[in-house]
Length: 236
Image (cartoon, rainbow, N blue to C red):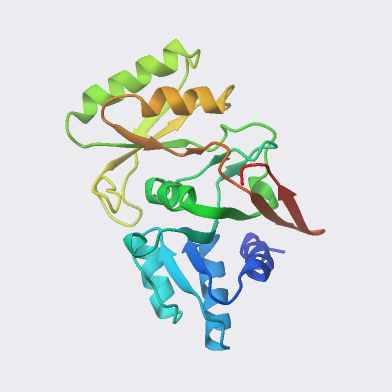
């Protein structure tokens, strides 16, 4: 099966956790998109839910799929968020942000009773770090922020970190998030202590957040050639 087919398989499995009356957080990216489309079909069949999108792209797809949306400030509790991940380690820690929306995804995930991650088997890793870590930064004095980030990496023992501002996907220029921030992608091969790195980076002035999700996932639904695997974590 192709990666796209596996993502659709995981998305369909995640649908079994959605019930009438729920408020559902809608993730961003190539794995969350099949879930939104499948959820829209269920809504057309009579399922009654409202969605909370994590990005403008997710909101657009949800509207096209016929899903009623509310903004986060219109609810005090999100029942479940379904989202993708770029890497998932055995403890349920994640790297997210390949779709450019990890800051808003993190806000929605933190407000959710459950965070269900859907992914194909290539996202399951023994140690985080092969996928570049996205770091969202304020454009103001960004070069000084980048220097502080580099110094922090060195202090924590990450000596050979390649960093670059993320370009726009389909045109010239630098990508901006929906919040108007820059994305710095840091490639370090392996992350020895995800929680310590997350804390160190997010304490830096100028850093909005990084793509490490520590103890946030309640479950991962992993689709592979041999079927679908459910991994349960203790975060929720």
